[in-house]
Image (cartoon, rainbow, N blue to C red; front, top):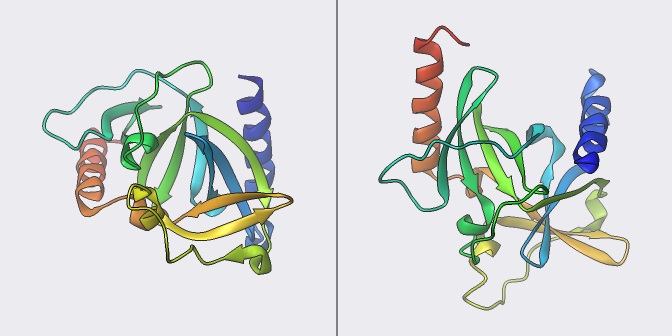
Length: 182
C-alpha cells in the first residue's frame, strides 16, 4: 500500500501547521465505482488499511460494523453500499478513511484512495438539478469540483451519515468512555 503511505505523509504535512488556511480548498479524493469523490481534508483524521470488522446485527446494510482503532471502537460504513451501488470485493487497495463529523468519528470503506487535491472555490459548481433516479448518491453531493480535465463529486459528510449512523457512532463513543478511553 505504497500510495496509502504517501498519502499519510501528505496528511501529516497538511495537519502539521496550526494555520487553518493550510487546509483551505484541499480534498481527499477516492474512487467508488466509476466515479471519483472528494471530502474536505478538514474532516479526514487518517487513512488506515482495511481491517477486521465486527458486524452489528439489525443495522442498515451499508453499516458494516465496528473496528477497534488503537483501543477506540468506531463504526464503519461501506461507501458503495451507501450510494446503492453494487457491492465490491475488498482487496489490498481497499482503505478506511477515518473522518470526524459533528464530533463523531466514523470510518468510510472506499475502494481506492486517489489523491489529495486542491480545488479553488471558483472551480466548484453546484450539482446538476437534473439526473437519473438511480444516481442516489447525488443527494450526498454538495458540489462538482473541476480538477484539470476531470471532475470530482464533492461529498457533504453530514448528509452521508444519517441520524441512525450518528446514533451508532455515539453508542460506540459511549463504549469507549465506559472502558476508560477518551
